[in-house]
Every structure is written in structure tokens, then in C-alpha cells.
Length: 391
Image: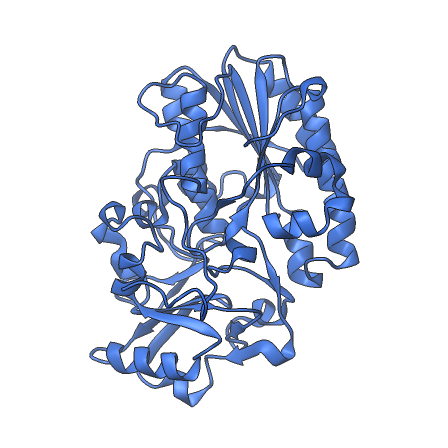
């Protein structure tokens, strides 16, 4: 079964295999001369590549506020977006880029999931359970494949993420370079780009996402920081060697919510009957049911959330290609997916305030399949004196 018609539910199914974050890593490796990697995105040959991942920089938000980001806007002219995977959330997207595989293959299928066979909610970003990251995410990473082919890698990001289990799951094999300011990001990127004959750098910047969560996309906080992101990207372009390209992308977009659009799914009696645990996040809920209750829970959630969310069974989500082409979804990770999956429409937030105190109060959210969340940029620049754009 596929999602309901676009006229009723304007959702964007990830464009796996043609134009998605899952295609970025292999395409980059192919452009750097690594054999056996498909260049689906048609990236040009280079000796060095740098990816700037701006957490929360949705394509539509960038276009709406292009006046705050003239450098990025110049690169975006004539371009089309690519898509995140599902759920459109940081843990899933960073692992998708880091492995070059779809979420249904690498298994990091959301911000939070219930550990199979338990009622324990496992937060991937905080790694809140005793789970071996190499077992939970066993796929070989893009960084490991690059290093094996003689391409030196570096992962440049805030020191807070260094050595963490999520980083081990999504980015193992790379040399971690801590950088806590935008200046440090640029300085360390410049050094890494010239430290080896062939290089792949991943530069991660998270503050725009945080400001969107707290204040909303398009708030003064978000817009002013977008200008800083624009300067960061431009500075990275100025330090590129002649044989390098800079790619700017994001892990997801974001939508703003308000009090009127929030539904408490953890206390509404229509939504709790037969439910064992609710995980995921406010825009993409994964619902784990009691034995024998899956069909009734599916029907109840569909009825209660009609018009504000697309609600499907696990099998329907897989068949619709939400987690990747069905033949690429690893059967061994299916029990991590909720028996029922709900993807919010519009500005709806499916909150669980008693357990998720912070998340339930946020303004900006992401995770669902709407264009504002799914569409992300993929912009390209050579050294600043020869600007270009990914087309």
C-alpha cells in the first residue's frame, strides 16, 4: 500500500536511488576515484571534497530567506533539492550519509525507537541504552570505504560528539577533528584539505537546527544565524584547493508548530488503548502495540488523526518505500519499526509531554514527509574564484 493521494496528504516519498542523502556518500566516493561506488548524483571528478552539513537547513526555508544568505542563494540558482530519508531527522540522516545506505538498511530509523522485545525507548542521539553501536549499525561506512581506497577522511564537528556511541555508529573510520566554533571549522577544514593527496571531509554545524527548534524557522534568531551559516560556507569555499569541491547540504528541514496544532498522543484515550509504548518524535511517531492489538490501534489512530497525519502499518510503510526500496530493507531491523507509523501533516505535532518534556515545548519540529522537512539543498562550489552549483 502507498500513502494516500497527494491531494489529501501532500507528502514527499524519499527519492532513494535518484536524488537523496543516501546517494551522496557513494557519489562523492565515485567522484574521488573510489572503484565500485555508483555516482548517481553525477558529481564531477575531484581529488578532494568537503561536505558542509548544516543541521536543519531545509531547501524551502533557504529559498524563503535567501536575502539572508546571498552566497548560498547564488549557488542555489537553477538547482533542485534532494531529499532526506524517513524519518527526516538528524540521527537517521547522519547515518544515511555516513553509510551511503537507506535507513531500512543501516537500521537507525528515527530519533527514538523501542528496543525490540522491550518497553525501553532508545534515543539514538543520546545513546540512552547499553547497545553496541557496531552491532546496532553494522554497515561499513563511507569513511571506512574511502580510507581503504587511499582517500584520507576527516570528520570535523563539535567536541561534544567525539567518541560517542552515535558517532561510532554513523561515522566510524574517520579521523575526528573537534571544532567548537565556525572559525575552528574553517581552520581545521583548510588544514585537512591539504594534508593528503586525496581527501574527503565532513563538516557538521548544528546551531541553526537548535535555534529553529527553540524559536522557529524564520524567527529573528534563525534568520540571523542563517547569515552566519552563509559566511561559513563562503569561508570554506575560499580555502578550497584547486582540485577540490565544496558541497553544502542538510539533514532535514523543519516546520513550526503552535499550541493549537499539538495533540497529546500519550494521554488521549482514543490513542492509548492497546498501545505498549510510543517512540519516534512529534512529527513522526512509531507506535508499538500490545500483542494482538496492532489492527485496532491502526484503525484508532487513523480515525483520530484523519486529516492531520498519514497513519500506516509497518508493512505499509515499508511497501511505500519510506525506509528505502523494499528489497533494500533489512528484515533484521523491522522489529525496530513501530507496528503503527504516523507521519504528521501541516503543522501538527504529536506530543508526549509527560515523557518528552523538552521536545513537547519546542516550536520547530521535523521528522515527517512534508516537502518542508524532506527537501534539502545540495549546492556545489569550487574555489571561490570559480563558483558553481550542483544542477
